[in-house]
Image (cartoon, rainbow, N blue to C red):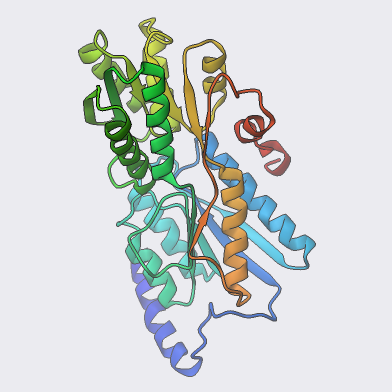
Length: 335
């Protein structure tokens, strides 16, 4: 029924556009009030809470400039529920929001609903993970390939360029983590040909629990030979860390993760984790909203906005820059 409603809306929009060529979502420099839907991949990870808080900050900053922005936050609970995320996009399209800020959990499955929204005059800014479509306003995200390269360089340094390394991938269809994984593999081969990648075709799945099960299987198979492990996102790294702790191998195998969580901070302080590559999801959320509003106001926006990436290790864990990324002011904006 939802898709039927969207299809009917597209027909109606087509007739309306014949009379109003500018369309419902055309730049409106005189307009000072907007409803922006912000759609994450999921709702449980700390990363998405930071995105949400950043989006609220973006709206507050714009309000201080005299522009009223209502951020509507909604997404699937699990990061493997493509159909639910499609339905969320379609629902906002039917409601006629002014714009959508979307982190697509699949780079292909979300193309149709995004392009349908554009036909109705509702533009989309993509954040976090790329979409296989040219019909978007901008892509606001981390240089994920670079983040994977940084993890590989640190792994090579930690191991002295020798040993066996395991890559536990996240899940198929996720453009952001795929870029990190490929960055890691490519750079590892380039800087440390003496390192052997003994497994790089296994996936953690969408949750910490599925990641822990996948990690246990891999550690049972390769644990005695492993020198290093890389996991490309919060949940995959959380699952691997738990699996390593359960068999008392946390700290005995060089382990690098991606994203921020309190458990990673604790693990680095305890010598059980040698680093994590950090994005800036708080900044990503804020810039996603601002980029969309700038577009709606008729301003020129960049097609690609890089929000930065850094490697945090036990050595720089307490630096001011690291603390800001590890502990964004979520509570200040999500009360």
